[in-house]
Image 1 (cartoon, helix red, strand yellow):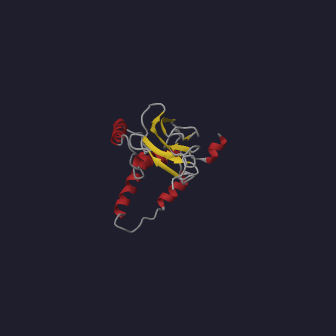
Image 2 (tube, rainbow, N blue to C red):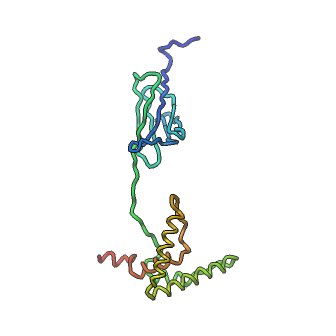
Image 3 (cartoon, helix red, strand yellow):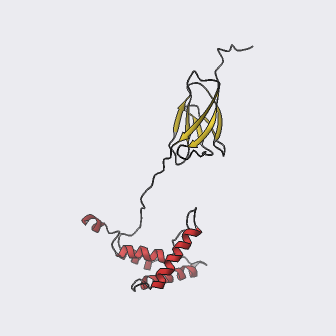
Length: 198
């Protein structure tokens, strides 16, 4: 039995490309969701998409780092719709936050000196690292030599070039980072009482 055309539910082929509103570059793998119907699709690597929708459907376009965009299909739309969807950048720049578990240098020193190392095959490496850190702490009492400053500066440049375009390695065992951290504690950068007086 054939269903009359008027009784059939109207379906619309909605397709297009998703781009960055500023650079006009395509946004690959953008997520497209039909509200209240739990259906959707993902754009391809060139930002192209195609999805079957119904009149009055609301489509939500989302891409990491961009503001989401909602488009509603009007009841009088044609059976084929082609549209360019431009998403606006929504990048936030946050200030650096330093979190340390010790309130004062005395607390850090006590915790560090009373550190209990595990008895395993890595204990020798741990002892070497601690000895290196203690040596660095002793060296902080003296003014750095110009050659040391030059080596540190060149090492920083090398590290930035080595990790260009990716996340840098963790510096948890870097003696210079520990020295900077200890110097910050000694200078009272994390003293709550000092900040309250300021």
